[in-house]
Length: 299
Ligand code: URA
Image (cartoon, rainbow, N blue to C red; front, side, top):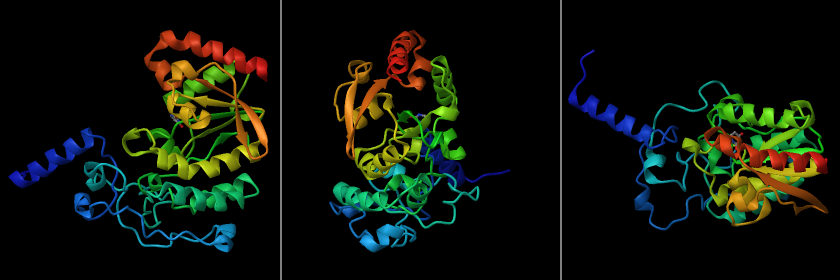
């Protein structure tokens, strides 16, 4: 095939964008985000009122703006193949807007999450929730994997590519190692509940922003109430910081029991190393093993 110079330039620009981590289509037309000035993206987002929140079944109240706002201009403009094209539940949905008003997102999410009385209802509420911008670029919602009710709940950082395609947390290489770690303390998928701090894959596998975590947090708290675990395990630095409300690095946070207040319960929680880190740094497995022993004895 003969290509013109212009096509070659476009292709090389696309490869550069891909190399920069822009791997998701977020709109049909390019947008100049710098021209928006200081206008908060998503400012026009209308939260449902209480009655609507209770049913939590409405589609997005606005048309798509066509971008995962709150990310770098490069990522927001990238068009590298349509996500959700596989007929996933999100494929036919309008694009969501990322509300950067974090407390607004959190309040709206809390109303919706509280109304869910089962994991099924919570999942349905999440499917209809457009307050977390990650949904715009993700293929599928990743709610949980494992037992609906368990004494052991594992909370990771965010779905990656494999999870995004499967719609389940921790199914890639890191997930396989996590399963091995759990089996070392006598656990299988049938008796553990596995989820993440955010329910959708961040583009390019970046760390979720505090706003994204905050928007998902009320759903996570409701999920914890419904699963009713005896202990919580935060996996990796980002999940540990988010769950334990701490700012130290994972090496300081791991291996120490703390309590997390969820509803009217105080739940013992511990942080450990992320299996993806253990894959890169096998020498750290001995630290993870010490954490696993603590988890086993607490159970
Ligand atoms: N890493 C995570 O933190 N969660 C997943 O679901 C997969 C990889």
